Length: 160
Image (tube, rainbow, N blue to C red; front, side, top):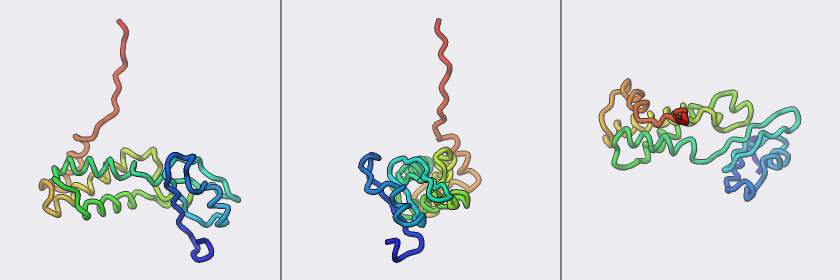
């Protein structure tokens, strides 16, 4: 693959990590650091030459929560191709230059809540526009998502 393209895209997606088809460090070595790599399991960043490559995890964590939340908020009875495409575009819009500079194809996992909300918003808008969901105005979508999104709030337990 590396003989035929400048930036080969290699996606060893098997889980668990021990079953991955190719280790990111090997892929980068085989391609002289030119490959864009994302895996299905977590891998630590890889140092190759003078660069550190952040290995993105290409699994459902970035889109499925947003698709589910958006479908629920939209009250859509089905998920359309347009809703899935809107989710993919929303995720792609979250990839910043600093991610690409580190050869990461995805945002940092620490941004999962924000990305989920953005994906959900895109799904709600697509469902509305396709006549599959409720007619929420653009400025009402964010509030509806915020109201429906679970917040991990753990109260402190006090022994009696």
